[in-house]
Image 1 (spheres, rainbow, N blue to C red):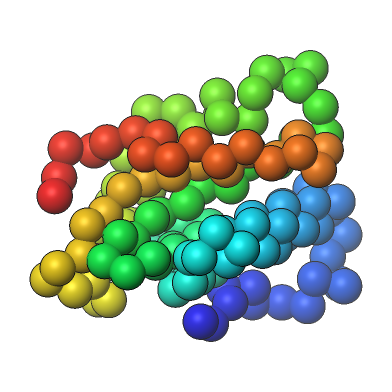
Image 2: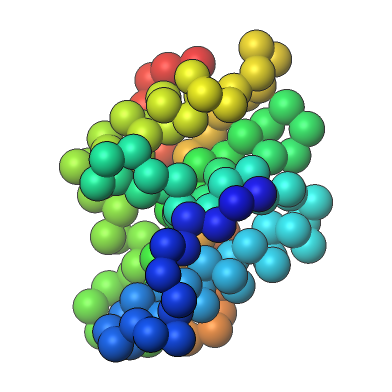
Length: 130
């Protein structure tokens, strides 16, 4: 697995970016503890990015990770809106074309992290393909 982090996180000035990377790393550790293999981290297609692509056998999950310091602005899961879902689906199609296998089954998951508490929403939405 190749990480999609293109610059040294130590040089990042924006705390949100650092928090986002830490959340993705926490999500990766969680998924690996559940038997998933991380196939891609920050898979990019143009300006769109899939945070994690995880595989467990023939099941491939495209995982959006959202982190918040609290719930004052609602659940992090609420930030995965219709436009964001459409972007994820487009990027996922590219990943499937490049890396998918004929027997694979695909789904879209979300992982929300508030402070350090992680919530994994499996099969969070369905785009209507495969």
